[in-house]
Length: 183
Image 1 (cartoon, rainbow, N blue to C red):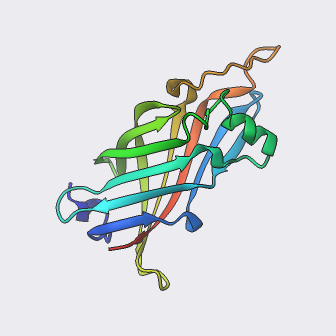
Image 2: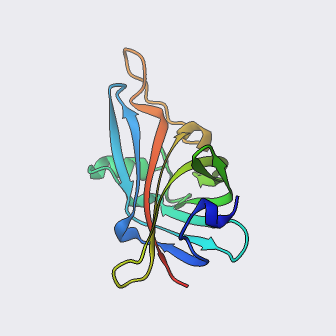
C-alpha cells in the first residue's frame, strides 16, 4: 500500500495536531448503568509523511488535564488511585505501522499509559485534506478504540453491593483530529 493510495492528499511533510480543532475523549461505564464521558485538554502530536514509505504518528496527552465536568472526580482520576499523574504525567502513542483492512485503514502503535506500554490498533476514518483558511492545509481523522484499564495497571476495584463495579474496566477512546501541515 502506498501513502498516496492510503491517504490521498496527505502530502510529504510534517503535520501538527491542532488542539483547538481536535478532541481527545473517552467514555467508561459508571455504576453499571451509564457512562461517564470526558476529554483531555492538553495534548499534542505530529504526523510525519516521508517522501517514500508510510506516515508515522507520535502523540502525547497530559493525563492531569482530564475534564469530566466534575473537579472532584477529575482530581480522583488524576490521583494514585487511577492515573497517578504525579508519577506518570504523560500518556504516549507512537505508531509502528499503517495497513489496509478492507476499506479501512488501521494505524498500529504502542500506547503508554500509567507506565505500561501495550500495542493498540486504531481504525482510522480519514476525512481528507482541505486547503485551510490561512494557516495552511489541514487534514482530518477520526478513530475509536477500546482498551482495558487493567491492562495498563489501573486496577482500582470499587465493587457495588449488588454486584458489578462503580467504574468499568473497558474504556472507549475517541479521537477527532485536525492536523495542520507545517512543512
